[in-house]
Amino acid sequence: MVFRASQRFLPTLRDAPADADAVSHKLLVRAGFIRQVGAGLWTFTPLGWRSHRKAEQIVREEMDAIGAQEWLAPVITPAELWRETGRAGIAALFHVRDRDLLLALTHEETFTFHARELQSYRQLPQCWYHFQTKGRDEPRPSGGLIRVREFIMKDSYSFDRDEEGLDASFRAHEQAYHRIFERCGIETYAVQAESGVMGGSESVDFLAPSGAGQNVLVTCENGDFAADLEVARALPRAPEFPERLDQPTEIATPGTTTIEALAELLAIDPAATSKAMPYTKEDGTVVLALVRGDDRLEEAKLLAALGASARPATEDEIRTAFGADPGSLGPVGFGGEVIADDTLREGQFVAGANRTGWHLRGVEAGRDFEARFADIRVPREGDRCVKCGGALTFRTAIEVGHIFKLGTRYSDALGAMFLDEDGREKPIVMGSYGIGVARIIAAAVEQNHDELGIRWPRALAPYDVHLVALAGAETQAEEAADELSRAGFDVLLDDRDLRAGEKFADADLIGLPLRVTVGKKTLEDGMVDVRNRTTGEDRRVNVAEVGTQG
RNA sequence: CGGGACGUAGCUCAGCCUGGUAGAGCGCUGCCUUUGGGAGGCAGAAGCCGCGAGUUCGAAUCUCGCCGUCCCGACCA
Image 1 (tube, helix red, strand yellow):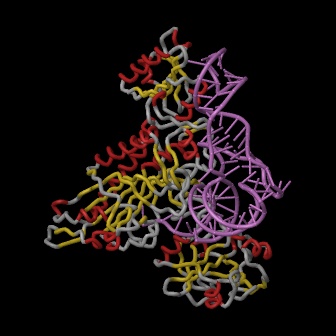
Image 2: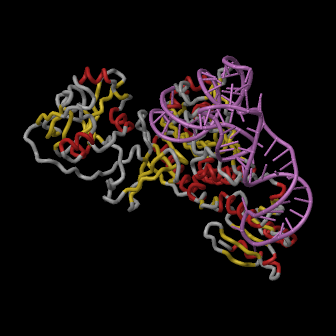
Image 3: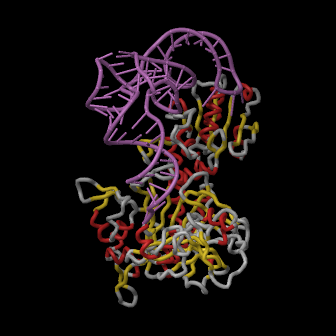
């Protein structure tokens, strides 16, 4: 079809909104794809909605291809369902004020509710999905479309007889997701996701590296490792240890409470020190997390290692448990459990003496204290790959998809049972799989733009061709637009009464893959000028050949 | 929820310190000129200065409260 710019709403802006930070935020607003209504609340303009629908359709096709069936479930949900699964207390839930209803932030409850109609193993497996608005009261929306309070998600739910079936459903989704993101033209990495305190079940995140985002993606230069920073393992450099001591030796370090100050005072490598971080578990017991002095503790890893919820201990709790102030704490003589990072297995480190103003030199795990070892540090720049020793790269990334093995958590809670072949009633084994459609749009822009504007991947561009009609060539431009339309292209015909420069600038900003210019220069030979937005390549061709460009 | 910043025309901002009743650029409307990279001229329209109290003869400006938005942190099913 041909779409006339003169009759469309194309609100391009010269300036980016002052509060925009992320590139995708700036460009999507400037190019007229989205407008903000409130914090984390966005309207898609006709232009933006076309791109959104393109992404949606790709997701739909790939879901259908693995046998998933499209539904539509309501946004408003009885709160009762959420009480049954124990999720009614989630802080991000929006509640309806005068009714016992809430806005779904995902649809496990609803689809499990429907799965109660599945009664026999003969009806399994099933895979259901829908595109539906999710409401999440994010504490801090940010980055345009990256972190919002309302968004359309494709969420699907698989229902299987057993773990093997779930695994097959999970792998099918994993493959479908790779195809989806590839078709959308965005680079993504499937990484092991944080399993959290709930633990156990497998969970994979799809991260799209970009200039903005909530996640940090760690990848190896040799391509054999990719992980979310929160769960990534990495090898730090080896410390330069001082001379070995036969036993820990106390040394006065008055007023020295930071690792930097300690390392300077003792003239040693900060990596040859240890840092003690006391945590209090829910039952009130204090445990000691121990990492190397130059490292940071990854709380999520610590909690996973503890298998329990915990919080940093208060100063009072610390004094009671250690008899010393924070800054002089260490594992030697501590009566509780010590969880030490793997980097502390070998070597002698300086540690707090549990006596305010004193440290111990030559502290050695196993000899001077007992500890449970685990990976509880945050990897950082300069670390090496655990698989091959290659250099690691750290990039911020957008989480565009997330797939979970749920098991029977929801089917148990809501009573979604089936009768198996052996005549026994069993809970349905479930998985859930989400894609944030608008995040695909944001990631595509983050990964495909230049200083002039967006460079849409072909599959997500709102139109195929931006046809710039210059003064004096209006008729020829119309003819060219019609011909391209007959050839199957969606053509944005810029027939506005503007100067050439403004039209070109808008074309660059909106970023359709091909720009066709018809003007006086092209009148004589009946050809048109074609520029590929991605490569910048210019060509003069017959209209019929436009489709072969780029 | 803690820390910080900002709310003045459609957009980007100045004015606020030192109170005297509102400005610029871009955009918008009309006319002229121009016409392959946001050109120029002339004439215009457009603001509950976030909201509410207070101080004052007088508040965009000072004080207090509230609301909104953004950034850092906490949180992230």
